[in-house]
Length: 150
Figure 1 (cartoon, rainbow, N blue to C red):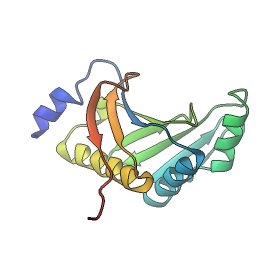
Figure 2: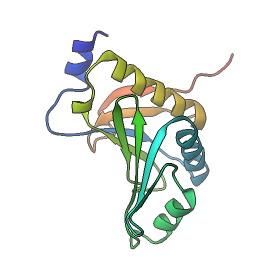
Figure 3: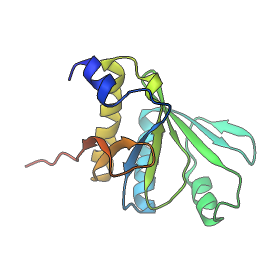
């Protein structure tokens, strides 16, 4: 697709975000995602309890957050993908949900960087990855599947 088609179909600016989903995952899958992100991307991991931002996601703090049933202060991660930011708020241990702001996507290069990130996730977790309209995991804009050697 050409950039204008991508902008019109995926990155249209209607005031909403886009969601990245990986469904039906385990904490072991989360560990794989965190290992990938910490190794390959620039990260800002924020713990509201301490007010500290680190350059790596601390899975121990993520698990403590889940185990507290949301009673603990919020934690979040910003993953730098090229010139864009992908946000993760660790809402649910059974699915990975990341948010992206379509306003940040200004070129085919930005799109290609996102697709590389999606492919990295699909390969690391051996699961399908979806980009959808906000809060609608059935409105698929992009789907990436793990590549298998044959």
